[in-house]
Structure formats: structure tokens, C-alpha cells
Length: 180
Length: 237
Image 1 (tube, rainbow over the protein chains, first blue to last red):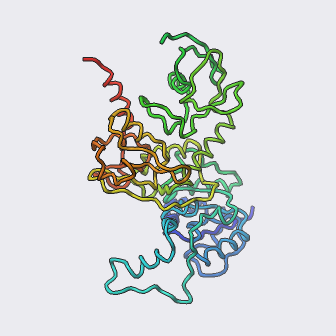
Image 2: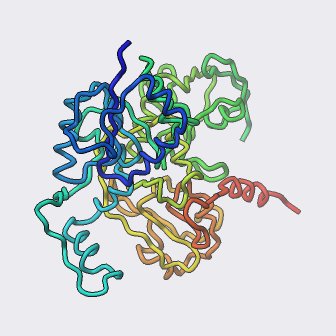
Image 3: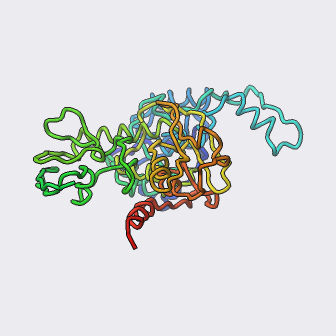
């Protein structure tokens, strides 16, 4: 049996879900026996390749994330929303209650931690924030969801090991699933 | 009121009970699990949350178990696929309507809505989030009202009126604009009716009402305290 291709992606999130993924500890060797991790935030910046499983952390907050997730969906047989930001926007979506301009002004200009008058960064290489933050399932079709902030390492390993062994994971039991 | 004995069937089980009781009461006595959110033992049931829906043979609509009285020879089903589907939809709509951010919520880990999400196996929400701009009323010296987390179960309204007798809380507007209000929609801290008793805070199933003395994730409410209090107040010494 040929090895499966696995990718992990970090969109609008804090990387906490990836930390939790690393918390599977030595069980990563079992994953490595069944899959090659062909793309993740610590490999170099090649274009997202065709994969069997993509674990996507974070919400869609910007033009760049939108382009990325549409590309990832095309390239992935199975797309998994990893964590509360990807599933319900979580903390990244807390700016959705306000107007984007007000959020940026408050963060960069009016922030109490500013020594002087701050200014809004405006470099061509920076991503452009969308007016609203979206969970993945509002943009693309998502195959599996692992909620949690972060999801537990056990839940992540369980889903990976089921899928890598061609079984369908069932996270519905409370002991595996958590919100927040 | 005279009680008449009656026999009914719930999930295939034959059960003997008395008239005048709700389906929910009879189910609880017989260890039949019914999901609830707006129900709090001892205060008036209003059938607001629609989680306790049951199927009754011969009735085309689903009925709320907390407000429907039992009748002789009733045939009731409590956990059909249809009911489970509706319960999941209801839970998702609770989550989509306001801003329930478990990870930063004071009630994280001690929240009835969060527990409900596990009970109905909700791993994501299929509806677009509304992300309403909700106020947080911190004007009261002891407690906070956070509309972001409110599911409008009205347990606070009923406990304030029926147990404390203060009538501080009420409900304003309709649909997604519905809000719990203090007095005539004035800051809670300026209330002339609130007795600061905190029963509403204990009754609240989510992180919508909480004491200022508690830090994030440490909130642990005891709504059953309200039910015990109601029982104790019935005692004649």
C-alpha cells in the first residue's frame, strides 16, 4: 500500500491547533508510517500539492486565505476543519461584530499601548482583510470537523489514524469532541 | 384537584402515572432522558427552547414535553430520528444567532449550551452566523449581563419574578432583536427593582449572567439551588 499524502495548513488562527497536533508526541511515528507530511507551516513555501488529507487550521480572514482555501479544496481528497477558528471563527471572528475600518483604527491608531500616534500598515505584501471572517464550511465543502480550542491531541490522532487506515472517524462522543 | 390514575406509553414502555403532570415530569420520574434548556424545576415552564419536543401518536405537530400534560392512553416517542434532527437544528440555531465563543467564555466547561452541543453531537454549524453586535452590561456592582451568550431561555426572568418576586427582568423585541432587559431597558446597575440576590445568575444556563468575582472558565453555577429553595419555601415550620 502506497503512503498517503498529508498536509497541514495554518490560515486565520493562532497555531495552537498545530501545537496540539504536535502533542500527539511519539504517535507521530505511527502517522509517518502511513503518510508523508508533504506540506505544513514549517516546510518551505512551495505551492500546495495534491494530497489525500488536508488538515486546515484557522478561519478565512483575507483575500489570501480565500485564494488558498479554494486551491486547497481542489488539491485535497479529504479536507478537515481543525479547531474552533476553522469551524466557528472563534476569536478571529470576534471582529465580525464591528466594522472593519473601526477594528483596524482601534488596533493600530487608537490602541492604548501605542507610544505615539500609530499608523495603519499599508504594504503591498500584506494580505488584505475581508470585511468579515468566515468559517471554512461557508466557503468550501468540508469533509470532517475536529472542534476545540485547541482540539485535543487524542482527537486529532484519532481522526488521522482512522482516515489513514481507511476508516470513517466518528467524533460525536463527548469525550473526543470539545468546544472551546 | 383530584388526581386520576392513567396509563400511557413512552418509547414502548407502559407507564402508570396521575393526571395533571407534564410529559417531562413523567419522563424524569421514569429515567427517560429529555433534553431541556429553558426548563428549571420549580418555576413555570414556557416551552421556549423547543428542545424537549416529543412525538404523540395522533398529533401531527411535535409537542414540548414541559408544557404538555399527560393523558390516558397517550403514546409518546422521545428519541426518534426526527426529534434528534430537530434538536440538532435548534442547538445550531442557538449557536448561530448570538456570539458563543466557548474558548474565551466565562462559562467554558460549565455551560449547559456547550453540554447540549455534545448531547446532540454538534461538530459544526450549518447555518450562516449572524455575528450580531451585542452589548455587555457591566453596570451592576456584582454581576454582568452579556447578551452575546444569551439564548433567551428566560429562566432569569421567571426566577426573578416567581422566586425572588423582584420583577427586575423582562423581554424586549422579537426575533433576532429579542433582548433581556432590566427594568424598562435601563442599565442593570441602575435598577430600582433588583435586590442583588443573584438567583438569575444561578439560573442562567450559559455565560450570559455571571458574577464579577469569577475569572474565565471558572464559572460554576448551581441552578438546582433554585429548585431546592423553592421546595424549602413550601415547608411550614
